[in-house]
Image 1 (cartoon, rainbow, N blue to C red):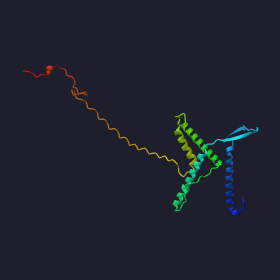
Image 2 (cartoon, helix red, strand yellow):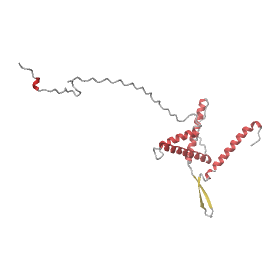
Image 3 (tube, rainbow, N blue to C red):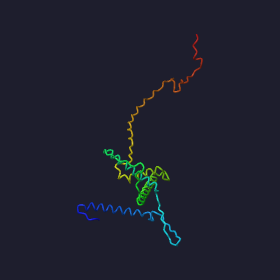
Image 4 (cartoon, rainbow, N blue to C red):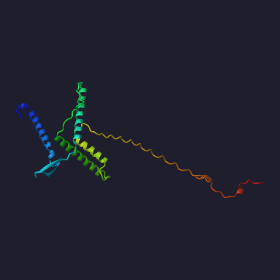
Length: 218
């Protein structure tokens, strides 16, 4: 680090440390494709009788997917900057339609991104398995368990950096139940008079014959 005065020494030390750490990180991840934990090593004999190692990296993302993500990130950044210029009434320069910005992604950055996505997927699968065990109704992890697992993982990983939660659950309050009215006392049932019709509408039987109903003759 070049010599600086005492006033600028602290800021210069911070910049130097950040630059050195960034270079060391890039150098470490640039050779990660040859690490045994990230690749498969095979040994083959050459024509001259020597043994040579061949490294086959276990890749999670192909180059096409990485390029698409990098292009989308650049387009998003350009749109945000253009919107900021519009709000501040500054003339913003637009991208070239023939050659839009396509950032390059180094091998180390790709390896770091792959390991992050792999760890994120493993955490989501672990939480989904925990949800399945807590539910106790299914023997396998289904789509509902995975949705809950991804929601919990996203909240735990990205929740600290988000200003607000990405999901808000609002439940309607249950309507208040009205108090039941007390039942009115039942009136006693009146007794029927003798000879009155019963419940079926027939009179009680009376002893006698048909001749008793004829008028008397002098």
